[in-house]
Image (cartoon, rainbow, N blue to C red; front, side, top):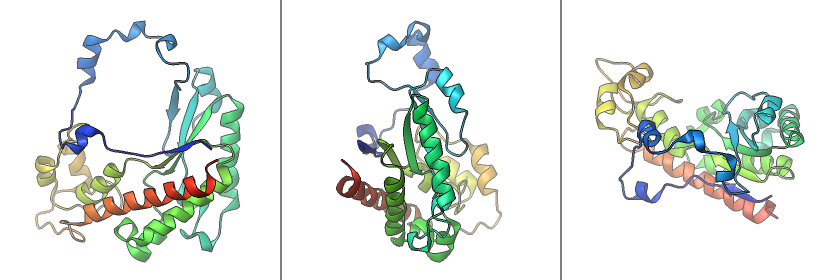
Amino acid sequence: MQGVVSVIPSAMEYQNSLAIVSPKSISKEIDSSTITRNDFPDDFLFGTSTSAYQEDIIAMKNMGFDAYRFSICWTRILPGGHRNLGVNREGIKFYSDLIDMIIANGMEPFVTVFHFDFPQVLQAEYGGFLSKKVVKDFCDYAEVCFWEFGDRVKYWILINEPWTYAVNGYVMGTFPPGQASAPAPVIANNIQAYRGAPHPELIKRGTKLYTNFKPIGNPGTDVYTVGRNLLLAQAAAAQSYRTKFQV
């Protein structure tokens, strides 16, 4: 097992100055038709990924991909959310077989442990990532994945896009649990751009336009609480991997 791939903000993000680059501006400067594999380092991996559905492995092999990134569903491994409530062996077998097939077809598996599908049972029990209780539960879940698949998986992405999960779930309301912090027009006009400005129509579909809008929870702090607990959960799982599983 080689390592954990963490999601770390860039230096520009720390400076609160995000660069938004248009693909059109890139295409004017670079003629992509002249780029070949020889233009990349020998150890560069070309891959594809999914967040929910597993693609045709043979098709990916025929396209020449070196790697495939897929996501594991928490409740497919731990139906009760908590590790002490039991591990679903059928779920373990499904992902184990998928990993074996990826490797058998000459590709490297990249595994995402959490890609937004949080167990409803834990959301109901303590509010999900609004509670620090999630840190232990996430670490327990990640450890099951490390133990079951770590003999073949060398690269782990612990939490996919923490910013996206926190802001879409607790500011925009477009992701579960749908806790919009303000009416859609207010969000569209005030949220800071990240990897591109949010489209107002997209936000409206998620939050709707309520005449008497009432935010759920504490709109002033919830997104920061969730962001903190996402980072704490990722740190706990990364530390566990490095101290108990990495060789």
